[in-house]
Image (tube, rainbow, N blue to C red; front, side):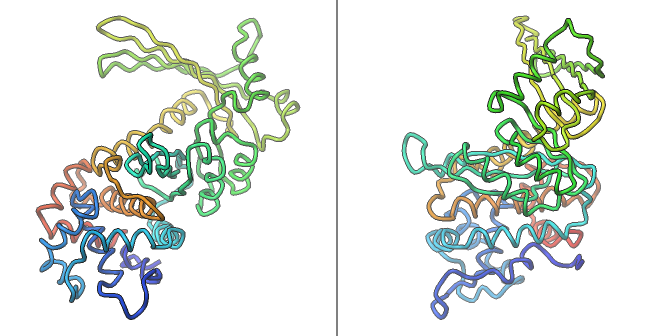
Length: 377
């Protein structure tokens, strides 16, 4: 593995979609300017172009930029026509060479609608992108774009195909709780923790009836924890049942099904004392204890807090109006490339937020350069 290669080096072989001989602005310069500008809080192509024009002298220390910085419309045309599958291949090659160990780590898979990419006023036509996110590292491993949320069922297998997940734990919400997906995960020598709802009615009914029947003499492992914060008290109780031979006999099509779990949550508003209760069910290929199972259930939602929320709050993804062809998907991949670089850059060993790193990069080009070409990546 060549640790001196940066993300942009992995894009060297990316085919330029424009007509040869009529290219004024080289693709590598467009990618470099875009990535730097996005790290420095630019949220659309107009801002990217504006950032580039104000940093042209610094950019020319990295690449020639003989023709200067393109207009926003040029950035848009290039990224709209750039082959998104080949661009993802570059991203995945970069990720596969990162010095990170995925065995034993949890990979959460979930989708997010890029609301600003909507084609119509009612919100339809917006790009929906399924991402794979490593909880322990806060890194994005890959993404797959689909027409809408219901198509996540077809996107998840494609995403898993391109990921090296051996030894990891894959967690997915109920929409991804499919027999074929469970088999794919097991065949790739990984484990799964899948939320179970009525989209798998027969299995759901059996699990729910069994776990809800307090009269049965059920042997289970149990764990409970309590949090107090954000104006509320939250009590979570998890029970795991591993002796499920009867369930395997009834549902042999579920690959390596080894345990089932029920998580009961009680939230109490400290001010109003209003209570809210929720019950969720899970199936897993793991034979683990209740404390560990509850951590997998909770960690899954880090993809919402540490990826989707960050994309909206720090990168203003839902406000970006990039749309059409491959534009929204490619811009999303650029944001995630920037986020991975930001997350892995920690020169002083101190915990610094994504927001502060982006702010620092926006006024300190030495910091930006170190972040961009961090050779540990």
